Image (cartoon, rainbow, N blue to C red; front, side, top):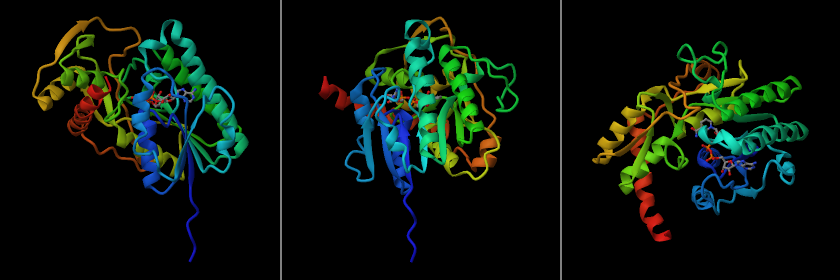
Length: 326
Ligand SMILES: NC(=O)c1ccc[n+]([C@@H]2O[C@H](COP(=O)([O-])OP(=O)(O)OC[C@H]3O[C@@H](n4cnc5c(N)ncnc54)[C@H](O)[C@@H]3O)[C@@H](O)[C@H]2O)c1
């Protein structure tokens, strides 16, 4: 009888929203996983530790608390079957102004270091997180990877666009990289700065939700388990015909529709604080995903209504924990 060799993954950003879900999925698929995260202070460390609850004590999971911008993690790539690079400084609005240095460092410098280390260690494939933000305000929809120009409207989008260029450089030297342009990922553990999460928080606590813009801006929303499924498939795919794939859930909706849906599910009205649109915010995102369907065999399955209900239920379940911690 032959035994299947164990696959080992390194996941950067493992304590984050998408990274923690990815680690759980890889473990349930039989991988062993080394997570790397430096617990940036963009949102509370306690939230990131809570993201790791399901992973703690799992014998096939270990966590390295390391900053990718510094040394001391590179040896963890030795013998890895795949590296999933999700660590980054996320968020569009904060990328303007003095905090841009964090974006340049945690996105651009960290990604170059990850590609270098993967190349040195002979890692077979690096799957990494780009963003729909690279498109900016596209002139035609849906956005297609090969033909829609990338014109980011925020410094954050610029860093992700530059990471795509970096990936092309390392690909040309033989490193197998697959970039995924995630379109607004949501669901349980969503980052506290993201709109859906803030709407859920406001509905549950009775607080106000500052709505930027008139509510007609729309996004192609992707439920987190669907985004994770595309990510895992990108590590397995035999043929990758492009270096970046759109990962969009396929159910575009306006902010007003998201609010109305969550109000209906919660059985409560949201207290809206109307504010002007913010710089960097785009009017619309919409993904053509036929390449991901064809090459990765990916098919998003979670509807927006089901996904919103799951996120709201998770926020509701957290409230007693937060009250106890206060
Ligand atoms: N959530 C979305 O809708 C979305 C959309 C497009 C792209 N993305 C990308 O997906 C990835 C994951 O996003 P997320 O929403 O889970 O964000 P997140 O902030 O929850 O997770 C990112 C994690 O990376 C860690 N990190 C940051 N810099 C690091 C460094 N230098 N060294 C080690 N760890 C570091 C942070 O501590 C954090 O835990 C990011 O690359 C993000 O840009 C996310």
